Each structure stands twice: as structure tokens, then as C-alpha cells.
Length: 89
Image 1: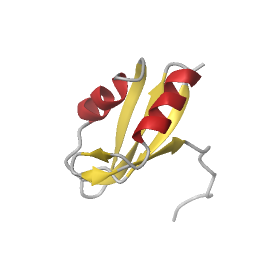
Image 2 (image 1 turned 90 degrees about the vertical axis):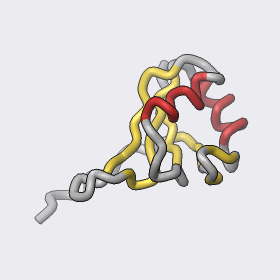
Image 3 (image 1 turned 135 degrees about the vertical axis):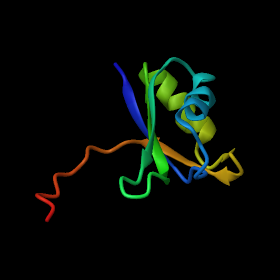
Image 4 (image 1 turned 30 degrees about the vertical axis):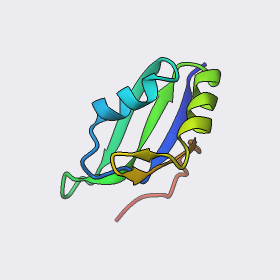
């Protein structure tokens, strides 16, 4: 079962391909997404990586949380479900 990970503290220059490659050393990556600001088109400095297995996700968290990537220390943990914040006005 796939496991979604939150990755915070990314360099604003980090691409989805770089993110995917960094996590592939721990197992199959199903998807890697850098979150972009819809108004400016720039990275918000965080993203999500979906690992194919629970074991790969746990290995990635253990090895990469608080490690250096792209010149910055990143945070890696299990992603939480998005809360419905209601309509935006």
C-alpha cells in the first residue's frame, strides 16, 4: 500500500524530478510533487512524495528527516489528511 510523505524545508529551486530521485534510493516512488504558489508560480518550499510501500516510506523518514538536501535541512514525515477548511471567498 502506498504511503504519502510530507517533505518540508525544500529549496525553492527543487524540481519534482530531483525530489523523486532523492527518495528513490529507499524504494519505488509512485509520485513526487512540489507545491507551487498559484499566483506567483514559485515553489512554496514543501512537497509530497508517495512511496510504493510502508517499508520504503519508513526507511525514507528515518534516513532523510533533518538531513541536508539542496543546501537546506529538510523535514520528512508521514503526511496527514488534508482538513476541509470550507469555501474560500
